[in-house]
Length: 390
Ligand code: RFL
Ligand code: PHB
Image (cartoon, rainbow, N blue to C red):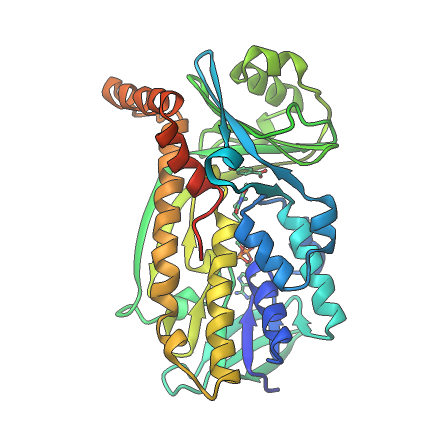
């Protein structure tokens, strides 16, 4: 088998790349370790920056998002008995769209099927060969049979635990990491969201977040220990702990119901450099992780794919032009590091740290107080939340 671009991973990064390349007449094959249902069963991101929304429109996969996505012009931050609205529209002229990653993935899978594009699900033991000779090939095992795909380029869109990043030589790969001493316990419930907009809470018992997927589907998170046992969190215990952390008006108004999904996510900041080695590109979570507090993970994946599709399109459709391939890693990383900074800052400001000293707590409260009092501080937050340009 042969194709132009071999893509590892059918998360949002891999599927969006395949779709943008298809629109430019460039062939690709996607290899995915899991089944289609497994990929669609993962509950992840919920907030899309305006740039991501525009990229999905350019990819021709926005019909349902434009109909069903909820446009949010602001969100609330609470601490102590204070509650403040960050008015994104007024501060930046932009908004964010609440539309789940599950829905984005489904829309992209439907577009891939309509284009007749190849996706190999349950591809086991995917390996990258021939990078040093600039003749890359992907090998894998499917239903017990060994398979091989020759390609011009490989796009490593296989998430944090994928094989692509590990394929960079040790002498080339440099990584930067911070692991936070807590996680997020999240539930999805078929109840009306407690508020029309998101509520972020810094409470002395720990962070809480009220989010949603639709007018009838709520997504709530509370900060928990990183080694928490999910089994010990009954729905009742979750609702009790969430309500303790919310401002009283929200705690009284919240509609509770059985959880239809419950999971714990660890919090991590991670950057791998460079994001290209010869004919292998890394994109999305394969190259970087942010803690979810700033809602940046999926949006960074989208901006990487913007740069990657632009570079490959220039190569194929402008006579082998290579300058955008050469600048891909630097172009991505400039934006990645800014999103890493913002996500780290939001996480630090809003969570309870187990080893927090009284000085650290004082700084945290001053940071929040400054945000409440200063429009300039809120404007900087809002500019990052709606997404820096790409
Ligand atoms: P994905 O989605 O992890 O997809 C990678 C795909 O590669 C496959 N794979 C392999 N395939 C073949 N061979 C191998 N060896 C393979 N290894 C892995 C995997 O099965 C998978 O299908 O990465 P991608 O496409 O880069 O997308 C990144 C996003 O998924 C991620 O950044 C976001 O979900 C992060 N995130 C959020 N981002 C936001 O922008 N806004 C949010 O509100 C937000 N909330 C969140 C989040 C992530 C969370 N969790 C659970 C990590 C909330 C949570 C709780
Ligand atoms: C979500 O709805 O899953 C969500 C929203 C905002 C965040 C993180 C996650 O900052």
